[in-house]
Image (cartoon, rainbow, N blue to C red; front, side, top):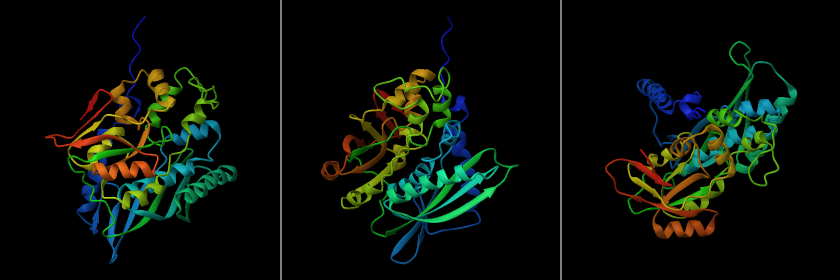
Length: 331
C-alpha cells in the first residue's frame, strides 16, 4: 500500500508566499501614486484631527463554497463583518460602521435574505452600524457569488496600539470558534476526500454535520477592545491567513507559546483526513486561538482575569522572527 500524500495549503490551491508577493506588488504600485496619513498591519489610518479614521477590507473566501453546498448562507455575513472588525480591534481601533459588497452571477431572493440575516447578526454582535452596500450582478465575471466588505473605525490618537511587542511581554490568547474564515481551501478538500458535507461530524459528541462544523461563524472580538485599551497593550494579532505566523507582525521576536488554547476537534479532523503535517496546520489555521495580545506580564494577568483569555506564552529577543508552539518552530 502506498503512503498517503500529505496535503498542503499551496497544493490545495493557495500559496501564502505568492499571495503576499502579489499584495506587496499592489501596495507598492499604489504607494507610488497616492498617500495617506499612516497605517498599521491591519488597517489604513487617516488623521482627522484628534482621532484616526481607519478602514479595513476583507471577504469570506472559499467558505462560501461550503455554504453553497449546504444551501445555507445564513452565517457567512457574520464571517464577513468579523474578519474586518477583528482587524480593526487588532490595531486598537473601535469599529463603527460597515458596508458590504455582494457580487453574484444571478440574483436570488432567498440567498440574499440569508446573507442579509448574517450581516445583521454580525453587525449587532460587533456593535457597528450596517450602512448597506452594493449588489452587483455579473454573470460573466462571477460564478456563484462572492461576499466582501469594508469596516470603518475610529480611535483617539493615544488609544491605538503601537503595533510592536516588547521583549519580556506576556502573550494573552483568546479562543476561536473553530476554523473561522481562513484556510477553507485546504479544509474543504481534506474534509471531502472520504466524506460528504452532510455526513455526521465523526469526532466527539458534536451533533452537527461536517459542513455545519466548517461553517461555524468567525468569533467577533470587539468585546476585547475595552480591556485591552484599559491596560498597556503593546500589540495584537488577529490569527487569520498564515495561522500562527501572524505573530511576527507584532515585531521580529521569538514568540514562545508554552500553554496554547486547546484546538477544537475540527482541526484534528482536517489534519487526519488530509494527512496534513502539524507545521502546515499551524501555518494555515488558528488551531484554537483566534486573537493574541502582547502586554507586560502584570497587565496580561489582569486582562486574562477580565476576559476568557489566558496567558499562553512570552516574547523573547531574537535575531530572526519565529514562533515556537507545540514542539514546532515556525519561521
